[in-house]
Every structure is written in structure tokens, then in C-alpha cells.
Length: 141
Image 1: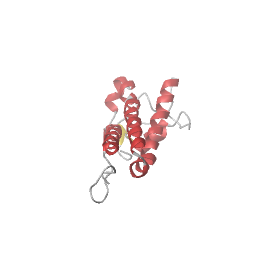
Image 2: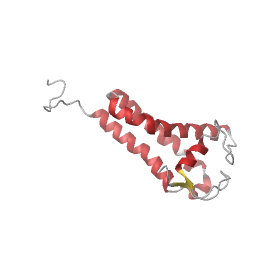
Image 3: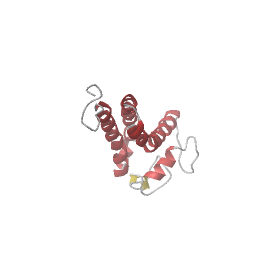
Image 4: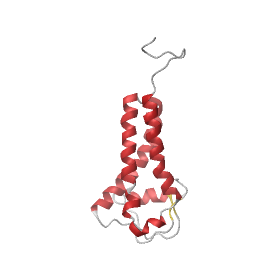
């Protein structure tokens, strides 16, 4: 979803018009802490949600590979719950866009759904028992 259109038109939320790809939406979401021309947040909660939303993307891209390969089962389960919270937080774009939500595009929905897939995968991974090369669990060995 990094290169797919996230918003069809900037509309009243952005001064950018035309398809907005995921990388540009990510950059614009960081505008409350890293000013970006043409993007503004009117209310403090828009700024907070926008910033947290961008940070969930960073955690997803940087943190999830490490968690899958190196994280303990308890860390994987905790991160699965963090992904569930990210789903809820990132749904704010759909909820708060109001009548402009029709301008959200495929990139947004794929990005949003990726957190659900991550949560499902981490819940599944954290529930698997450790099995050695012979197919024995740690308790059987």
C-alpha cells in the first residue's frame, strides 16, 4: 500500500489534489511533528491521531520482522494486541473523514487490513508450542 493511492483527492483535509500514494500519506500524517506544506490539523486530537497512526506504520515495518523472528511467545502475543489497538486507532481515518470517506482508496484499506493480518499471525504464532526437530514439545523432551 506504500505506492497505491490512499486518498483519491485531497479534498478538505489536504491541499494536495489528485491520488495520494501511501508514502505521501505517511509523510503528511507526520505533519503535526514534522511540518509539511499543504497539510494541517485543526484540532489537537486530529494531530495526535495522525501522529500515532504514522508511528504504527513505523512499528509495523520495523518491529514486526524482529518480533516474528526473535520475539518470545509472550512478546508476540503482546504485540498482537498492539496490532489490534493499531487497527482501532487507524480506523479513525475512516470514521473522522465523514462525507469525505468516499475518497479513501485501496491503499488505505490494504494498509488498515495489514494490521489485522499481523495480529492474526502473531496470535497464531504465539499460541504454537515449541517443537524440536523430532516433533517433541519441550515438556516431552
